Length: 439
Ligand code: SAH
Ligand code: SF4
Ligand code: F3S
Image (cartoon, rainbow, N blue to C red):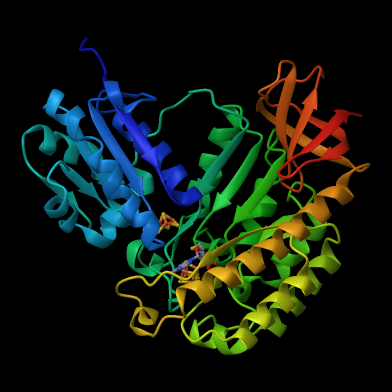
């Protein structure tokens, strides 16, 4: 039998790309490839890219430039670009960087082995269509392979919301949900392979409406069914849109024990004027009322969110509204970004806020978010939490895992193994993690 070829995948962007990279590696397994951890000995390099902000997209070209010498030394090396930059820029990537042999958009990954063969034959292979066939049913799985205790499972892709700043509806296409049976099958398979926590993924995961016999299922119904799988201990989902949080999903946070008390619910701004200009279709007030209802169902839920500062037209008063909203919510953990104009989006045409003003606002927002994060972490000291251990820590005898609230937790000198779920009493809080001891 021929020696397997080596595939190096580098992943940028969101968790959906992490999931996709895994599936691409599995698909290429069927084409005689094994994954390698370094580009230096690879027969094929695949960059799974992100287009969300300019910085993310430009990173891809600097990374590609670094492969020049590798490719000169090994002309057989094939270089591919996948993900959202591939979708957004297509052929342009090969024009800008002739090293690239293959470009594949997120909806065409099941065609990767065929594209690789074409690239091997000396062609420049490109596929950025949104094909009718379902990539998930066609992507090959690698059966029986053991895996770690946590896994991502994409249940929904694409977005129909068209926020004025965002490329996702263009790079990932229209909102599509995977059928219920397909999701349940994949979840059971993951659990058989050792997974104890599944994070359901979608750009708009709470808009999930998967086809099933007798009509579509909502995300809440899917979660309740998944909770019935023996051996699956924890369920999470991300990312949610405030307009798609239905009553049943809120209720599930209260009555479904396996659904973890953490919710990523981006709001982007606290100003109704800005929210309107962003085409978010909700107000700050509506968002705050929603969080009240969620907290009524699950009082200890840890809220997370995303913010964009310096959106075109944002005034100091608008920004003050954002700060006030953050004060009102008290977030456990957040992502915040300076607005980046993206080609093809409606907001790209609008006048920018002065860059220094935007940077200064971002710094103020991040200081507030960091303070809230620290306060909430400090309040965990003395509390007992569930922890799923995921790996060994850097210190000898140390184990690392995630709490129910998704805090990183370190425990020392305890008799636990990767994959164990244990009760831990938090003893100390650091900048980005907690320390604890087994109860
Ligand atoms: N589907 C998710 C977000 C996906 S993008 C949602 O609707 O919330 C992840 C985050 O990137 C967004 O929440 C937003 O905060 C940020 N983002 C998206 N486009 C951006 C842009 N043009 N400039 C700066 N940040 C952006
Ligand atoms: Fe982008 Fe999210 Fe808005 Fe969709 S809902 S357009 S993914 S920010
Ligand atoms: Fe980036 Fe595409 Fe995800 S643009 S954030 S990789 S959906």
